[in-house]
Image (tube, rainbow, N blue to C red):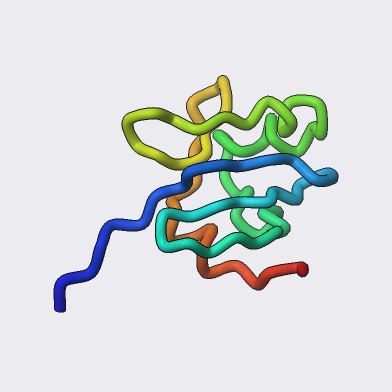
Length: 83
């Protein structure tokens, strides 16, 4: 099977810990990312002000934060949509 690599094209904070994400496969979904925020690197993201600093890494094409935390597109895609 020749599957395309999944990327995040856009991400927007819609409320605390919820991102609306547009993926390279055309999927758009709002997801609560709290289940993925485990481990020391994600602790700062539990602050909604810091969480809101989410950006798209131009090379990795996934969501990142200023402290170096990132989430794999596949993990985000697997989350249940809130919409």
